[in-house]
Image 1: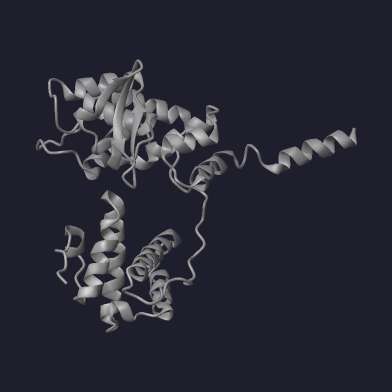
Image 2: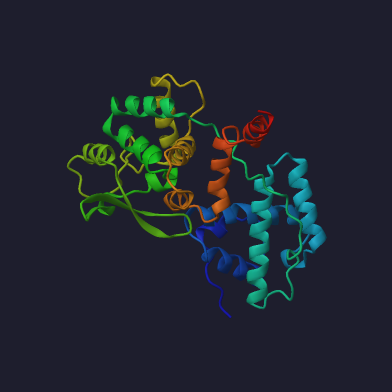
Length: 305
């Protein structure tokens, strides 16, 4: 049987594998795209490196070995979400190997995973700070204004914004639109606020193809360059907090909830597969305003009259 050539993602996984293990790794990663695939490759690379250091063959690991890997991650101070993600990648890989009859049973099937905290601990911007940032961006270069508007007014992930192409801009039923590729490869068309559309038009100028956002060297802007642009605009706006592209996505979600947008619509706009992800932003912003203490105090006060 001829094995397929390893993908670019597989090439970064250094331990030596058997043919069966190599086929399973390539097949499992081939089922994902973009950042998801990169994350899975990183998770599996770390696990296989851990196995190699203990002279464990990949298809010989037991549940106790995977549990030991998780405990080592925790001992190194890795966040619970990181440990859970890595265990999920291992479980997914093992499940794939079982389905392809490369493993008899999955050693990861019953591995305990840390309980993930569904509260949002991201840096938050209030309405005034968000407005000040957009004003500062509007006074800067058009590309900066367009990028920050996409992050703050559309809630895009930084990879979605930097991955935008001129050819994906359109017009639909009177709406200026942009077609983007979401996490997991889902393709969606989103409307653009008028200020965002104008900023994008100015940013691309006479160009008719290629990336919407270019770096100084003419290549596509990457996430690091986008981060520098956001931080620079935040400083000009007088915001002392550490502001990242994700901060603006967080601000979009919070602002939408504050403005009364239904939770389900916010979930769709933010492309959250799990509604709990959106709900944690709702809890974080409203946990004080809607705390039961106010209701109980009013209830008891009514009875005391």
